[in-house]
Length: 468
Image 1 (cartoon, one colour):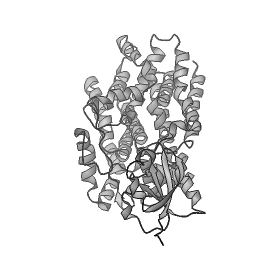
Image 2: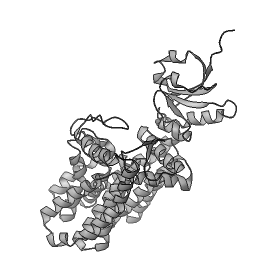
Image 3: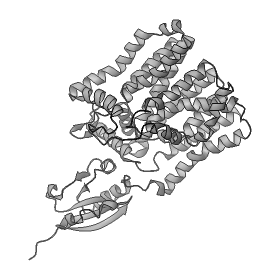
Image 4: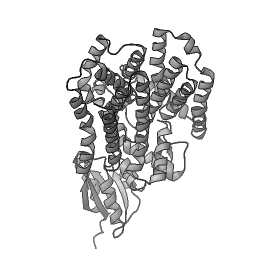
């Protein structure tokens, strides 16, 4: 496969992902929740503290992703494309760093193949257009890792400082975890190869000051604005969440309790369909196709994230994203230089295009995204009804972040009908599967079904008229 073909393939994958950004509604609870917080940041002008509700600060994550998403909406309007576009930019920047990294150490074909593998894997493809904090973290870890490598192997002071800047961005993307994921492979590699002179020549003082200058001011201002943030974020999110699988202190959701070691099963899904070719890595190391200091560093980087989360019972599969560039670099190296050349072009093309082609087709078809969390159609229907039949919209029972986003914050949650404002007419949204529970609560009202969409039902209600 020629270099030109590989460039065209990568551009096609990135182009398909870009074209798909606005074709489907907000995907799930996390994406809708973060999208709504970014929208609040924009419309309320509070660029310091992300808000879980208008009067409730969100201490769970730093603001880098919210800043980028709010800026995307400021420039492109409040819509799915605008809020996902920053993740695509983080992904493209990551691909450029992957290409630079591998082209310097191996060759351009391996570099392009690595970017293609990263962009067409399940998690890589999804992260290129998702409203989460992981794309910003992954880019930050990649920048820091590359900066460390350039600094210690080539004495490149500028890239070493860029690596420290990546650590600062990582602290703003997801917190101290970024430093841990970079430090683990860097320190182990240094202990193994012992380049002590180059290690101590890294711009530690200037670099650490740059890292702190990027991140610390926001942490101090955030604590000043909402006291208690540092304790919850540093102790709760970064210690108790890791060691307590069913941590009950989560203020914004529930713990994701998983069996010990489940992160390795998540890796198989995250890297699919390239997971099918992972056995080649074993033969690549065994036959020295993946040898030398470079591949040792990449292997340590690839293993750092899954090993770190192996003993954590509170995990999500998206936690693996910072390791995917390294896994992609490893697999590209063995595919392009190992003894597995027969059928490699056909296999590579079919795997690379499998998910990127499926995603826009599925988005246009729509059925794959017809989920209860997708409230775009229901919210649009409610907005259209306002012209002839005005009324507030309430989500009965579950809070709907997507409902809030698509109604510009007008949709509200109600758990008990006794707490409803004295509205003469209003709308109630309820998931279909929840309708069987508590239907008697609607009895004091005359409720008429208006729409069923995304497994939810929209009712228009008004109080029953008292008998004459």
